[in-house]
Length: 311
Image 1 (cartoon, rainbow, N blue to C red):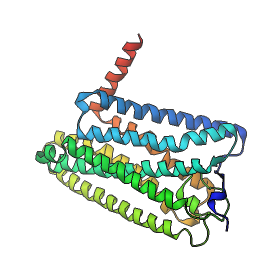
Image 2: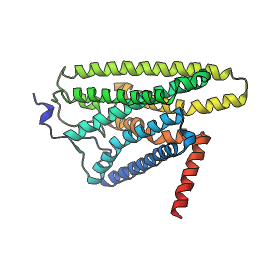
Image 3: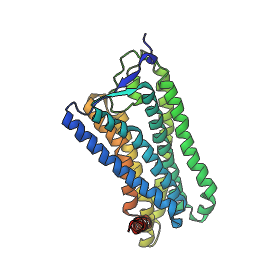
Image 4: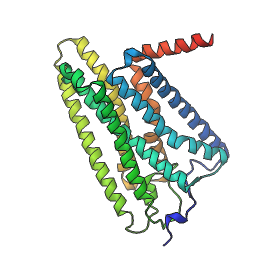
């Protein structure tokens, strides 16, 4: 049976075969990519440069923006380049690299969102102990654990996936290299080890999901007990952006991987992949800055400072 090592490249799924539409797709992806770079870059710069934002919540937000940049930079530039060059190829090493970084950034972000839920829980349900539980050392350790968990999973999944013999050709039914699509190319029964690893990862992911849900049940219970309307509004303003980001991240990911096979098609898979790999990294900066006055003020000062330097 032919092994995957005999493949020099993989063939990705194209959005369209028409040259004009390929250029349109490349232009749209460029606009989305630049918006993600601008939004996340502004948040990173604002948090790093504003001492008033050197708090646990904004420290985790800075890490989230870094991970969002990583996710979208792993898939979108290659797709744009292929459309411009009218090709569908990606090298074997490029495919492995794409799988590694996509899994790394995606799972690290999910772990970080779980940590951020804990941060909101402590801030609202245990405010008197917030300084103890969420000191700078604890925050750095939790963020490092989120990045390390993504790194470990990426190493395991990438090594496992690309050690499996491939017998079904080298055409990947997705616009980037994705583990489930690569497993479809594997020989009979040879993919079971990776499926087992995916089951373990999904179980841990489900544990994180339950933790987030339970955290927000207690958060909303505590918020509804706050006597003043202003206090409730402030608490909701702290939590709703994170809850919106978590909902967008989990809902798009669950639909991508848990949708019924009966409705699966190459066109739908492309759309769903865009929803969970491109939309959240682009929308997250907008969601977080929409109702956050501190962040809005920091961004306004940053923009004014840049304008003054150019005048």
